Amino acid sequence: MADVPLSPRSAGVTTRRLLPPPALCGFLLLLVLVFSVSYAVGSAAGPVAPGIHGTGGTAGTGGGGDGGMDDMPGMSHGSGE
Image (cartoon, rainbow, N blue to C red; front, side, top):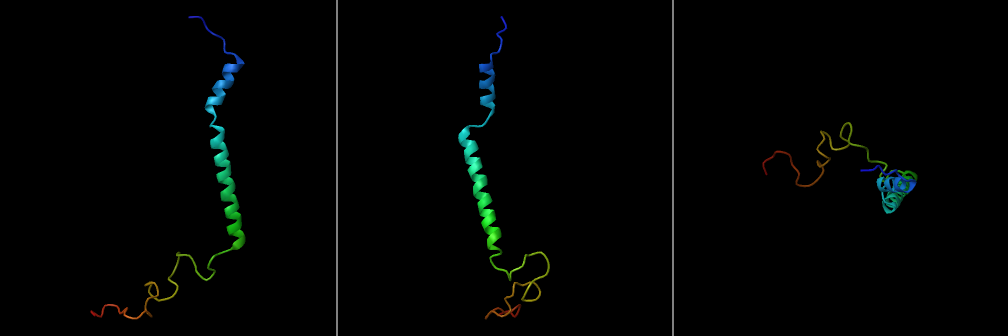
């Protein structure tokens, strides 16, 4: 078999096959844009409930980490009712 020299045209086709389709690139760019705008709006708005703290650490109210259900009617602990 004779060796066929590669032309610049066939090199461009090979490179084109390695790249993702333009629609996928556009979709990913749009996705990044939407998440960036969402993050910026969320940062500008601030926390949703400023009085609520994260779960790392001690329990807030209710003592003993039971979720603060001591003041709910009918919630007696271990009375056998």
